[in-house]
Image (cartoon, rainbow, N blue to C red; front, side, top):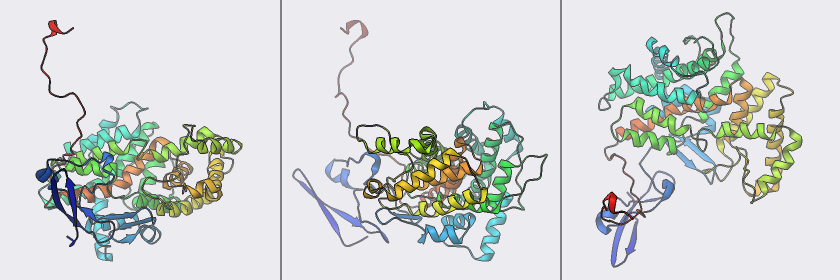
Length: 430
């Protein structure tokens, strides 16, 4: 708590509200007693000016283009570390020692398989079901299989559930993909690292030997790190809100996946690629650039700019480099969509309109191109986002459960409906 305070005058009442200061970032006016002292609520659609919790996990400065996990810049974590290291950091608060990482990795690998009966779940879905629909149902069903990690009051069970989610999400995601294309499921191979194992589960078939491309594995590891957590976004807030009721962790993560499915959130990279498909060829780009600049045209360029970052998205800088490494390694030629993407990127980085409005290519733009080049269909993009974000959701959920000030979420409203009125019998209504 800082020594600062804020004074609010409301009619004849005047109250003093405490101001809290974080380690870094803007101060927060504590309005916890506002209703009790004034009988009034605040009005903040989308909670864009409201701190819903206290957290030590992730910090974002959108104006400066800064993203920190437990104090570590995202570019250092992505360029020097691995996804599992980032998982450990988010869960435990510190980077692991060699011994700690070895133990953590072995615990993650121990839980990569899913219960064999869960295989029957997938045959109940239509082949053309969106993989995110499959993920919501299947992840929620984990609570029906792992009863020994549902007691949220037990720290050991909370950690077991956390490890299980991180371990099993790649397996479930790969199974959803394999089912959608009519291929047999591939069991985990714990001799491989986390991302290489996932690639093998997605792209290998029983009748041929499969060798993981190390460049693609590293690229996917980057994608996972860059999507691991992003503070109190819509899906993370959903997980926290669901968890505040005491719901089991598997149900909370399923709720997060459902929220992430929205095109304004996790579906943004899928939308970016669909936009590239709509443009079609490089020669049509000027037409769409002109439409994007026209205020009266509903068309919007997807994958440019960011609601939080008013500067270059720090994740996009890393993803840009990763994207070009993947394209160079695969030697993809004559792909009109990728040609459109490269030209759009060039224009966005040099056109005065984009520069003035800070409409830089964001992480969704580059990750969509990269995932397509790696062989993933667009329907899997949000699934991979969910896979990566699981550790952030779990870390945020754990932090909320362990917060002594945590209460069940209960937003207020500004009611504008009919005032109280009396019921009129049906035969007397004119």
